[in-house]
Amino acid sequence: MLHRPRSSQNIGACARALANTGAGALWVVEPLGFDRTQAARLAAGADDVLERMRVVRTLDEALDECVDVVMTSGREIEGALTPEQAAARLLSCDGECALVFGDEVRGLTNQDLRRASAVATVPTAHKSSLNLAQAAMVFGYEILKARGAAMPLERPRPAPATEEMLQLLRGRARALLLSAGFLNPQQPDRVLDELIAVLRRARATRREVELLLAAAAQLERTRIR
Image (cartoon, rainbow, N blue to C red; front, side):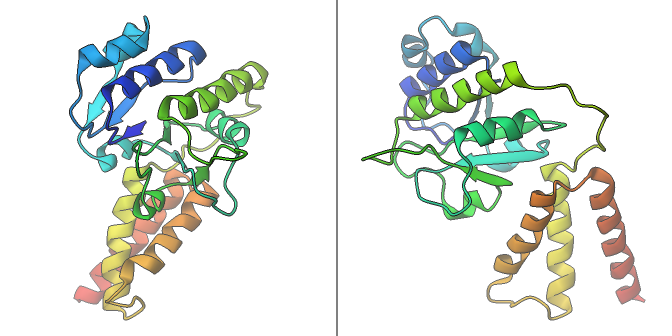
């Protein structure tokens, strides 16, 4: 998933990386002036990937159905996954998942990274930044390797919660916790992000989040009486 890519040629090069590795479908969020012809020049025959490419307007729309989101960064972030670890995590996911890359100049912002279940980075020697397509190829190659070694699941796991459900819960919790005086009205999102991050790390199931939503709804009804 490419978030606000600035270069159509980089989109084409990423399509080629996906065709090389079979790592998944290409999603593009809010591209800045997409030119299909320019993209095709760098796709080098990966026209089928470009034809199936999904273009969406917002990151929220792109992530709604995801149950696991790994975002990438060129910065040093404590606890960041390696490409190999990210590949293993994504392939173990029981539903829709996404590997998100930021734009070529600034990458993903801190606000974007708060939406991640995990953050991954490519270890480098003298220069931390990579070309967008290079980064996509590194992660794609690790997914290709991990897929060959992946073992079938022994038993089905409960359906995981989607990002859309987590955002719905976040909205309900924000209103309730503000009214209860638990959140700082000046900076309510800081603590909210930490609470939602707990559910992402735990890979909360659909049933678990539905229970939390039901509990929030009951608390709302109790306060109205």
